[in-house]
Length: 430
Ligand SMILES: Cc1cc2nc3c(=O)[nH]c(=O)nc-3n(C[C@H](O)[C@H](O)[C@H](O)COP(=O)(O)OP(=O)(O)OC[C@H]3O[C@@H](n4cnc5c(N)ncnc54)[C@H](O)[C@@H]3O)c2cc1C
Image 1: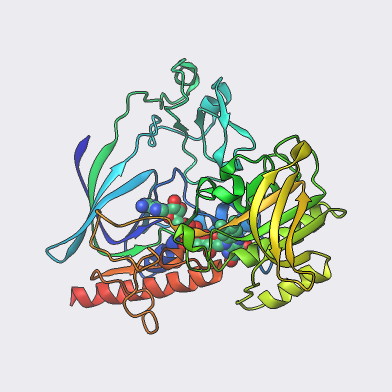
Image 2: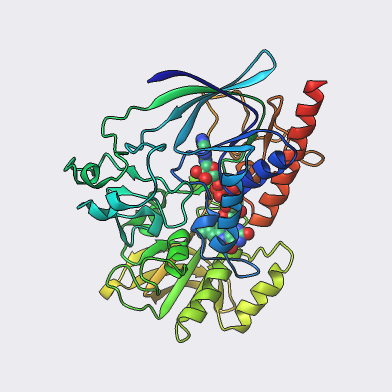
């Protein structure tokens, strides 16, 4: 439904991950009004879904939640969740964004986040926020520290039983809510749309998600998280505690057959981190990382890798070719070793974690005239001297939207993008 709502801000930040939030806070602190447009039902991006972060092993949600709250409570920042950008154009010196507010079927104004609808809902479905290992209701708040604490109803699974509407103390349930289109005008924009993992279904050689006990690194983050699905690490296939776990590096990255010729940069370090956390959680387990090269590029990262070796994590220099299902939920890993022993070998593990390649979180094609580079990430026109500058005037890029990167680099780049954006606003007001 088109509405005549036309919001006006100094800056639009597209994406409410750590880079978007950092850019928004930097701009707001300079007294600019900022709209953060996020496609998910909560801000927080990947970081709020992680267990701990390399190389400090700080609790990820303990660092991210205060940032999310600071942005949500800042008087100069407006957070628009569950919104999709349709178009971004330049008109009379302004950036004009066409946005669709997806229906939550729960009024944002009326919902008080009491979760009565969630407790009352009789429908259970796999919870993607917990890697699919736990269940959520059809009426739900995405996760415990989601911002905003507003419920939504998943129309694909709702059985329209009416129980949520009956129990809701503020009459917030709106079964017939429609998508709303509106316009947002801004002087400048920061694109912070981040990354996604390549779908596991794309990896034919690794069973396309069909082999039991083969999970993604993001699912392992959930198994390791303090508020994860089981509160301990268990195999999804049979609930058994794993004692021989493998990580497969470059599962998709540096893989021409999938069109991902590049290195996804963070996978070596997050696999090392997850292996270290697993050694703590399961001290008797054998942990092997199959890798082509270890790229420990950041400050303190090489020491972090060496600590994992000292803790007994087994590093095998090899390229894994195939995964096959074995007996009793075991996974057969066929690899070509580059160690002295060499040759093609097969090992069995009871849990395998895929360090999948990272691809752009958003494709501007057809929505705005922002160019992408050969790797499909947002193109930066002065990568050495102004790494946040795009080829659309007044639009800057921050964080993993310009290419896979770790949290530190994403935050630094978000600060740089905010500074460029504030200079641009100041210059255009003169
Ligand atoms: C398994 C795993 C473990 C990791 N562990 C670590 C670690 O320990 N330490 C570390 O430094 N780094 C780690 N990283 C990397 C870290 O996740 C990234 O550095 C960080 O998330 C980048 O932040 P970002 O805000 O740029 O992108 P993201 O976190 O991807 O956030 C992007 C946001 O934009 C939103 N968005 C996307 N498209 C649109 C759109 N069209 N409209 C509106 N919103 C949109 C998304 O929903 C998301 O909220 C890990 C990554 C993975 C995959």
